[in-house]
Image 1 (tube, rainbow, N blue to C red):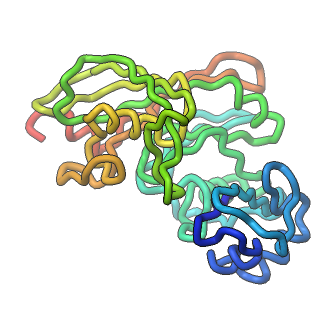
Image 2: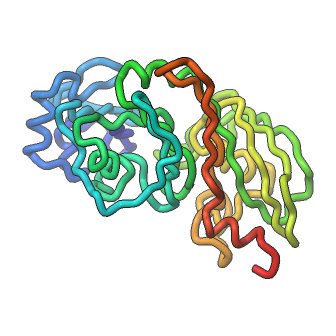
Image 3: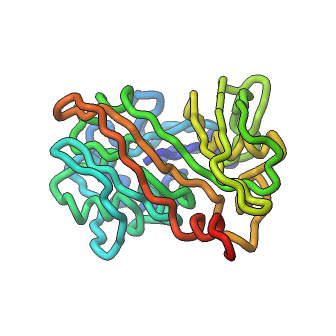
Length: 281
Protein backbone atom coordinates (compact mmCIF):
# COMPACT_ATOMS: atom_id res chain seq x y z
CA UNK A 1 0.00 0.00 0.00
CA UNK A 2 1.26 3.52 -0.75
CA UNK A 3 0.35 6.84 0.87
CA UNK A 4 1.02 10.17 -0.84
CA UNK A 5 1.38 13.06 1.60
CA UNK A 6 -0.95 15.99 0.90
CA UNK A 7 -0.35 19.71 1.34
CA UNK A 8 -2.41 19.66 4.55
CA UNK A 9 -0.21 16.88 5.96
CA UNK A 10 3.07 18.67 5.22
CA UNK A 11 5.56 18.69 8.12
CA UNK A 12 3.46 16.45 10.33
CA UNK A 13 4.72 13.36 12.14
CA UNK A 14 4.04 10.17 10.21
CA UNK A 15 2.07 8.70 13.10
CA UNK A 16 -0.25 11.73 13.10
CA UNK A 17 -0.86 11.26 9.38
CA UNK A 18 -1.52 7.55 9.74
CA UNK A 19 -3.95 8.06 12.60
CA UNK A 20 -5.84 10.75 10.65
CA UNK A 21 -6.19 8.30 7.77
CA UNK A 22 -7.76 5.63 9.93
CA UNK A 23 -4.80 3.46 10.87
CA UNK A 24 -5.41 1.88 14.26
CA UNK A 25 -2.81 2.00 17.04
CA UNK A 26 -2.58 -1.77 16.77
CA UNK A 27 -1.79 -1.66 13.06
CA UNK A 28 0.81 1.09 13.53
CA UNK A 29 2.48 -0.96 16.25
CA UNK A 30 2.55 -3.97 13.91
CA UNK A 31 4.12 -1.87 11.16
CA UNK A 32 6.85 -0.76 13.56
CA UNK A 33 7.70 -4.39 14.21
CA UNK A 34 7.60 -5.44 10.56
CA UNK A 35 10.82 -5.36 8.56
CA UNK A 36 10.60 -2.35 6.22
CA UNK A 37 7.10 -1.76 7.52
CA UNK A 38 7.21 1.93 6.58
CA UNK A 39 9.68 3.36 4.08
CA UNK A 40 10.26 6.58 2.16
CA UNK A 41 12.38 6.40 -1.00
CA UNK A 42 13.45 2.95 0.09
CA UNK A 43 14.66 4.13 3.50
CA UNK A 44 13.03 3.11 6.77
CA UNK A 45 10.96 5.92 8.30
CA UNK A 46 9.90 6.16 11.94
CA UNK A 47 6.47 7.23 13.10
CA UNK A 48 8.00 10.28 14.85
CA UNK A 49 9.68 11.48 11.64
CA UNK A 50 8.19 14.43 9.78
CA UNK A 51 6.74 13.89 6.32
CA UNK A 52 6.44 16.42 3.54
CA UNK A 53 4.03 17.19 0.71
CA UNK A 54 4.23 14.66 -2.16
CA UNK A 55 6.28 12.20 -0.09
CA UNK A 56 5.31 8.64 -1.01
CA UNK A 57 5.25 6.33 2.00
CA UNK A 58 5.33 2.60 1.33
CA UNK A 59 3.33 0.56 3.84
CA UNK A 60 4.38 -3.08 4.08
CA UNK A 61 2.41 -5.26 6.45
CA UNK A 62 4.79 -8.14 5.76
CA UNK A 63 4.37 -11.40 3.86
CA UNK A 64 3.35 -13.09 7.07
CA UNK A 65 0.41 -10.71 7.47
CA UNK A 66 -2.09 -11.97 4.92
CA UNK A 67 -4.82 -9.67 3.65
CA UNK A 68 -8.26 -10.35 5.05
CA UNK A 69 -9.72 -13.11 2.84
CA UNK A 70 -13.10 -12.53 1.24
CA UNK A 71 -14.34 -15.66 -0.58
CA UNK A 72 -17.59 -13.94 -1.56
CA UNK A 73 -15.84 -11.79 -4.17
CA UNK A 74 -15.82 -12.89 -7.81
CA UNK A 75 -13.25 -12.43 -10.59
CA UNK A 76 -12.61 -14.87 -13.42
CA UNK A 77 -9.18 -16.51 -13.65
CA UNK A 78 -7.92 -16.22 -17.23
CA UNK A 79 -4.64 -18.08 -16.80
CA UNK A 80 -2.73 -19.83 -14.03
CA UNK A 81 0.46 -21.83 -13.52
CA UNK A 82 2.80 -22.45 -10.60
CA UNK A 83 4.25 -18.93 -10.75
CA UNK A 84 1.46 -16.57 -11.86
CA UNK A 85 -2.28 -16.05 -12.06
CA UNK A 86 -4.13 -13.62 -14.32
CA UNK A 87 -7.51 -12.31 -13.19
CA UNK A 88 -10.21 -10.56 -15.19
CA UNK A 89 -10.92 -7.78 -12.71
CA UNK A 90 -14.51 -6.57 -12.88
CA UNK A 91 -15.24 -2.84 -12.86
CA UNK A 92 -15.67 -1.16 -9.45
CA UNK A 93 -13.35 -3.62 -7.68
CA UNK A 94 -10.14 -2.01 -6.35
CA UNK A 95 -6.92 -3.94 -6.86
CA UNK A 96 -5.38 -3.37 -3.45
CA UNK A 97 -6.82 -2.55 -0.01
CA UNK A 98 -6.89 1.06 1.14
CA UNK A 99 -8.44 2.95 4.01
CA UNK A 100 -11.81 3.08 2.23
CA UNK A 101 -11.60 -0.42 0.79
CA UNK A 102 -10.25 -2.89 3.32
CA UNK A 103 -12.05 -6.10 2.32
CA UNK A 104 -13.65 -5.71 -1.12
CA UNK A 105 -10.57 -5.80 -3.34
CA UNK A 106 -8.87 -8.21 -5.69
CA UNK A 107 -6.25 -8.64 -2.97
CA UNK A 108 -8.90 -9.90 -0.56
CA UNK A 109 -10.14 -12.40 -3.14
CA UNK A 110 -6.56 -13.54 -3.77
CA UNK A 111 -6.09 -14.06 -0.02
CA UNK A 112 -9.15 -16.32 0.02
CA UNK A 113 -7.96 -18.36 -2.97
CA UNK A 114 -4.29 -18.55 -1.98
CA UNK A 115 -4.11 -18.19 1.81
CA UNK A 116 -0.41 -19.07 2.00
CA UNK A 117 0.74 -16.50 -0.58
CA UNK A 118 1.40 -12.77 -0.43
CA UNK A 119 -0.51 -10.61 -2.92
CA UNK A 120 1.97 -9.32 -5.53
CA UNK A 121 0.15 -7.64 -8.45
CA UNK A 122 2.52 -6.92 -11.33
CA UNK A 123 0.13 -4.35 -12.79
CA UNK A 124 -2.73 -2.45 -11.23
CA UNK A 125 -5.90 -1.00 -12.69
CA UNK A 126 -7.99 1.89 -11.46
CA UNK A 127 -11.00 0.79 -9.45
CA UNK A 128 -13.40 1.54 -12.32
CA UNK A 129 -11.20 0.08 -15.05
CA UNK A 130 -11.80 -3.59 -15.84
CA UNK A 131 -9.59 -6.26 -17.34
CA UNK A 132 -6.35 -8.22 -16.97
CA UNK A 133 -4.43 -8.10 -13.71
CA UNK A 134 -1.28 -10.22 -13.50
CA UNK A 135 -0.34 -11.47 -10.02
CA UNK A 136 2.97 -13.16 -9.20
CA UNK A 137 3.03 -16.01 -6.71
CA UNK A 138 6.58 -15.28 -5.55
CA UNK A 139 8.93 -12.32 -5.18
CA UNK A 140 11.23 -13.85 -7.79
CA UNK A 141 8.44 -14.09 -10.36
CA UNK A 142 7.30 -10.54 -9.60
CA UNK A 143 10.79 -9.20 -10.32
CA UNK A 144 11.06 -11.16 -13.57
CA UNK A 145 7.63 -10.11 -14.83
CA UNK A 146 8.18 -6.37 -14.28
CA UNK A 147 10.35 -6.28 -17.40
CA UNK A 148 8.52 -8.76 -19.61
CA UNK A 149 4.85 -7.89 -20.03
CA UNK A 150 2.79 -5.76 -22.40
CA UNK A 151 -0.82 -4.61 -22.19
CA UNK A 152 -3.42 -3.57 -24.74
CA UNK A 153 -6.43 -1.54 -23.68
CA UNK A 154 -9.75 -0.88 -25.35
CA UNK A 155 -11.99 2.09 -24.66
CA UNK A 156 -15.07 3.86 -25.96
CA UNK A 157 -15.01 7.47 -27.15
CA UNK A 158 -17.90 9.61 -28.34
CA UNK A 159 -17.57 11.73 -31.49
CA UNK A 160 -13.97 10.71 -32.21
CA UNK A 161 -12.97 12.46 -35.46
CA UNK A 162 -10.00 10.23 -36.32
CA UNK A 163 -9.46 6.58 -37.24
CA UNK A 164 -6.21 6.43 -35.31
CA UNK A 165 -3.09 8.28 -34.37
CA UNK A 166 -0.38 8.87 -31.81
CA UNK A 167 -0.53 11.11 -28.77
CA UNK A 168 2.84 12.18 -27.40
CA UNK A 169 2.50 14.58 -24.48
CA UNK A 170 4.33 14.72 -21.10
CA UNK A 171 2.27 13.82 -18.03
CA UNK A 172 2.67 15.26 -14.53
CA UNK A 173 0.73 15.26 -11.28
CA UNK A 174 -1.77 18.11 -11.24
CA UNK A 175 -1.05 20.61 -8.49
CA UNK A 176 -3.22 20.60 -5.35
CA UNK A 177 -4.29 16.98 -5.86
CA UNK A 178 -2.81 13.54 -5.24
CA UNK A 179 -5.02 11.79 -7.78
CA UNK A 180 -5.42 13.78 -10.97
CA UNK A 181 -2.78 14.04 -13.69
CA UNK A 182 -2.36 16.55 -16.50
CA UNK A 183 -0.29 17.29 -19.57
CA UNK A 184 2.50 19.68 -18.62
CA UNK A 185 5.83 20.62 -20.17
CA UNK A 186 7.82 19.46 -17.14
CA UNK A 187 6.05 16.10 -16.98
CA UNK A 188 7.36 12.64 -17.84
CA UNK A 189 7.60 11.56 -21.47
CA UNK A 190 4.40 9.70 -22.38
CA UNK A 191 3.20 8.21 -25.67
CA UNK A 192 -0.04 6.48 -26.64
CA UNK A 193 -1.00 4.97 -30.01
CA UNK A 194 -4.65 4.35 -30.83
CA UNK A 195 -6.69 2.74 -33.58
CA UNK A 196 -10.45 2.58 -34.08
CA UNK A 197 -11.66 -1.01 -34.14
CA UNK A 198 -15.37 -0.39 -34.64
CA UNK A 199 -17.85 2.47 -34.93
CA UNK A 200 -21.51 2.40 -33.99
CA UNK A 201 -23.38 5.66 -34.38
CA UNK A 202 -21.43 8.36 -32.56
CA UNK A 203 -19.43 5.86 -30.48
CA UNK A 204 -16.03 4.39 -31.36
CA UNK A 205 -14.43 1.28 -29.88
CA UNK A 206 -10.74 2.14 -29.75
CA UNK A 207 -7.62 0.01 -29.19
CA UNK A 208 -4.84 1.68 -27.19
CA UNK A 209 -1.17 0.69 -27.26
CA UNK A 210 1.07 2.22 -24.61
CA UNK A 211 4.73 3.00 -25.21
CA UNK A 212 4.92 4.24 -21.61
CA UNK A 213 2.82 3.37 -18.57
CA UNK A 214 2.03 6.57 -16.68
CA UNK A 215 -0.80 6.82 -14.18
CA UNK A 216 -4.09 7.58 -15.98
CA UNK A 217 -2.15 7.85 -19.26
CA UNK A 218 -4.98 6.93 -21.65
CA UNK A 219 -7.49 9.03 -19.74
CA UNK A 220 -5.18 12.07 -19.66
CA UNK A 221 -4.10 11.82 -23.29
CA UNK A 222 -7.57 11.41 -24.75
CA UNK A 223 -8.92 14.29 -22.66
CA UNK A 224 -5.95 16.45 -23.67
CA UNK A 225 -6.86 15.92 -27.31
CA UNK A 226 -10.47 16.87 -26.67
CA UNK A 227 -12.11 13.44 -26.80
CA UNK A 228 -12.13 11.95 -23.28
CA UNK A 229 -13.23 8.41 -22.61
CA UNK A 230 -16.98 7.95 -22.37
CA UNK A 231 -18.13 8.27 -18.75
CA UNK A 232 -14.83 9.61 -17.39
CA UNK A 233 -16.06 12.11 -14.82
CA UNK A 234 -12.52 12.95 -13.68
CA UNK A 235 -11.11 14.05 -17.03
CA UNK A 236 -14.31 14.53 -19.00
CA UNK A 237 -17.90 14.20 -17.86
CA UNK A 238 -20.29 11.57 -16.58
CA UNK A 239 -22.50 9.80 -19.12
CA UNK A 240 -25.99 8.31 -18.86
CA UNK A 241 -24.73 5.44 -21.03
CA UNK A 242 -22.20 4.02 -18.57
CA UNK A 243 -21.47 4.56 -14.88
CA UNK A 244 -17.66 4.58 -15.17
CA UNK A 245 -14.91 5.44 -17.62
CA UNK A 246 -15.26 3.05 -20.57
CA UNK A 247 -11.80 1.50 -20.33
CA UNK A 248 -10.78 -2.16 -20.27
CA UNK A 249 -7.38 -3.89 -20.17
CA UNK A 250 -8.21 -6.46 -22.82
CA UNK A 251 -4.96 -8.24 -23.60
CA UNK A 252 -1.74 -9.05 -21.78
CA UNK A 253 1.39 -10.74 -23.08
CA UNK A 254 4.22 -11.87 -20.80
CA UNK A 255 7.11 -14.31 -20.56
CA UNK A 256 6.24 -17.09 -18.15
CA UNK A 257 8.77 -17.35 -15.28
CA UNK A 258 8.07 -21.08 -15.06
CA UNK A 259 9.35 -22.10 -18.49
CA UNK A 260 10.16 -18.95 -20.46
CA UNK A 261 7.37 -19.33 -23.00
CA UNK A 262 5.35 -16.33 -24.18
CA UNK A 263 1.78 -16.27 -22.88
CA UNK A 264 -1.01 -14.07 -24.24
CA UNK A 265 -4.23 -13.71 -22.26
CA UNK A 266 -7.43 -11.94 -23.31
CA UNK A 267 -10.16 -10.64 -21.01
CA UNK A 268 -13.61 -10.49 -22.67
CA UNK A 269 -15.17 -7.05 -22.97
CA UNK A 270 -17.44 -6.45 -19.94
CA UNK A 271 -21.18 -6.25 -20.43
CA UNK A 272 -21.50 -2.50 -19.83
CA UNK A 273 -19.09 -1.77 -22.70
CA UNK A 274 -20.20 -4.63 -24.94
CA UNK A 275 -23.82 -3.54 -24.98
CA UNK A 276 -22.85 0.00 -26.05
CA UNK A 277 -21.19 -1.37 -29.19
CA UNK A 278 -24.07 -3.69 -30.05
CA UNK A 279 -26.75 -2.55 -32.54
CA UNK A 280 -30.12 -1.61 -31.01
CA UNK A 281 -28.49 -0.79 -27.67
